[in-house]
Image 1 (spheres, rainbow, N blue to C red):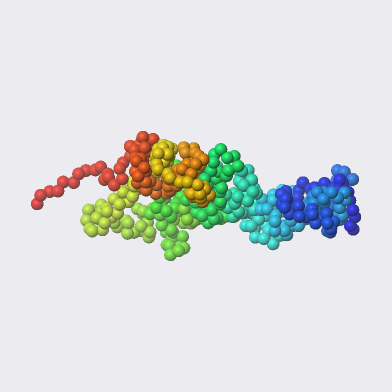
Image 2 (image 1 turned 30 degrees about the horizontal axis):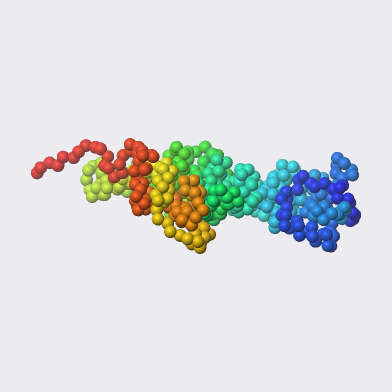
Length: 478
């Protein structure tokens, strides 16, 4: 039965999963109600604490619009419902709409699980006609940090990104989302006047979900006891629960320093698949391997790491080792060459990591030196040209912030210098900057390598390619 009730006698429901109302849609609904009135009644239930009040079950947006339109009464349908029945109705009613935000959806599912007896992820999935994984991923969104939840609600990234981030611990979420070092955002840097408070210092745009997943795989180590979620990684979770030995592995040849976490990770040269899948062969020496970095992060399967015992997987290597120990055969020399090549690559990798860290430490000094040279360089530009530069020159790159070393200034020449410095600052951050930027710096009269040596002295490490010290072989005369 439909009846009219004063707006003052109706209160919104605290369990309504929808907490964000689009201002523009609400404005249009208000205008429609002002012209045509409320065409569809809202659903309410009696307030258990005050018989004069009613609680909204469905239709809060119409209630808000009617209030904004200046109405005193609104048509309602009064129905007796328990808290559990009302919550279930609200969830189902809102899920039939397309504009419910995934975070609001997640909060609704959580309320059902916590407050309605008998509800779990599986029952919710059956009730709404979705997969268990869909509901599970939505509930996991509540694990996002407050900052990321706010960014998600503001539309800075999509649900796919949010699901990936929610699987990480808070400190890793912050690292992935950090524009300076993370893989979530690509930062578009425009010419910016630091004195203009209305300017936008860092317009950001999220990378694709696939790119973000790739960044996480390479930079965030999978922690078995923390990340082996039974829903997402059932094999890994089973391995952890069994208490069996689990070795950390990767398909990569080397692991980035930030993903090592101080523990050894076996590269693709140190293990063989041994579960009978993908043309692999089982063996008695197999243990559980878990991919912690790189492609397939989180996967778990049997692997063999027994280079000295398992002939099934390491037969050729064992024969080569035996031949080398005996000091005979061409294969021994080939294997010796392979070992030297492997050692050289490892030393080169260590050298690259050390040099990259030194370059990072020296960047502020390099930027300062470049800014000084740019200020002295010739820059002729007048009128329209300066305006074109201001509008259209937009250097791209991760981590290049608005320069404090060189202000934008006010003249066309200042703009030219500023734009040139932004491009140079971007080049300093490129993946091959260690090799490419010193050449660019020389054109400005800057010795970038000298600045690096002063700002980040070179540690005493073994030079890549240098042979390991050993006994000198003496060739006997025949």
